Length: 339
Image (cartoon, rainbow, N blue to C red; front, side, top):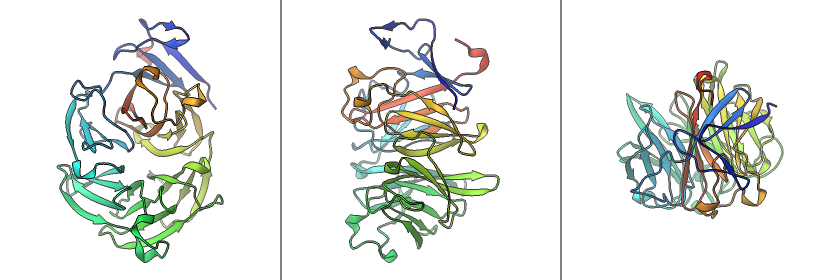
């Protein structure tokens, strides 16, 4: 495993054992395995929304570089420009429970798939928020007695338009549906052995040269599980994971990022080998806590990473599960940008 280093750019001093306030041009530099990132503490902060509200959902990048993320407020979906300015907020009908998102392009248009824990469904819509279809609880699979037992936390869309749903807060199954929502198969359920789960919180379609694989963030088993698209178990990945919530990829760089609720993010290579961890929260009492006040936040330290993603340039965006809302951008540094 590569060793983690924390560097400081000019203008940032240490005080009382903590890092000083960072700006967009100066802040702590996180480095692991030859990958270097500038922590941009103020990126995405808006005078129109000094507090986003509970960020208990997903973060992803549109094809134009805009950032989408979830809150539990009437602004269930927030969109920021590539520069971090507020562009719009929508989704008041999704307030309280919009937890997972996936973005795909169909017929030249972007479509957003969302998993809603409180409505017990997955829906897909255009980027104006117009709902194009819904899929409720999979009664036909035989694992549920009522819709309320189904609380989906994540959705991933395959190349053929079919989609996979993680029932992370419900009964712990993975469900595969056709593009029109017809049920295909289910697998999993509670347990620790391969193919079973304890809070299958996230799902991600990993498009590799040898074919697509489904990665499941099996959070309370402290691991990732990798399957083929028919649900056959392929391998387990632990890699020093604590409570993995979800996975995303930077295809150009062959990197995977894992958002770990217990206070850090993890980088893996494309074969799931550990590169290292970034932003590790040194105080275990602050990890995975939703109500940590803003005055306790420190640049260079995550609290409860719930989702993460890369943009095309390999910059990282991390959504912490925090009641007042936190988005952090880690700017990828090139060799010539040595601090």
